[in-house]
Image: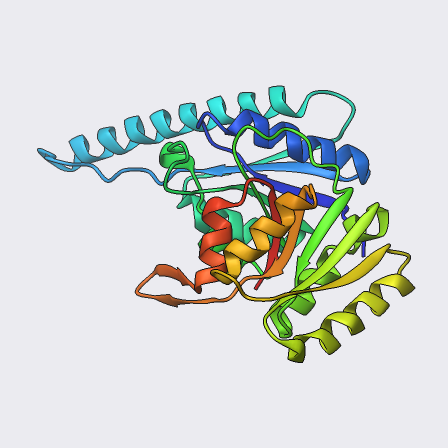
Length: 270
């Protein structure tokens, strides 16, 4: 698997330029196209006097939204810099819906982390949840104020299931070039066999991988993040486990905690 088209969510939040630079660096590294995407739904006319007033309001609202999208486009191009091929996809639609639709022609999606202490991305912002649940593509969740991702030391948070298997396959372009890959499973010895099988599989792909069994000390997410910090990793690969309920995106404890708190990039697949 190779990354030929990297799709990045663009908005006007404080973290957007850094996310754009990070995605641009990946596009340059993998010789991929970098596609920026942004969307904003046109507000409905309010307090209209008649049909003509409604039409005028709608046109003004469309013009305002297009202006916002042009600002996001300009910011994206400045962040991407030179030396890579870029494309821009904007729409008058819900941001999450638009990004998921455009994922059909992408190999990797880059979105910003939306933790409780992170900056507000405004009306163009896209939380990772809907994209992870619906896009059918690997999603790289980038924390704010991070502009480079080398992927030299990588943790795979292994929990045997289709989500984790897809995540590992999706991360192969990173894993093959890493200096060290830590295949980590938390709990008793029951998970070791699966983790060792994954380590052997990655070795056949040329990755420098080792297996690590962590005894559960605190919450599983804390054990994984603590291990990642001790090993000075810059990428966590894991499956994303969750379900939708009334359009709210609910994730299990480990996925939710890592999504909200990880200080490094996370490559996830659902």
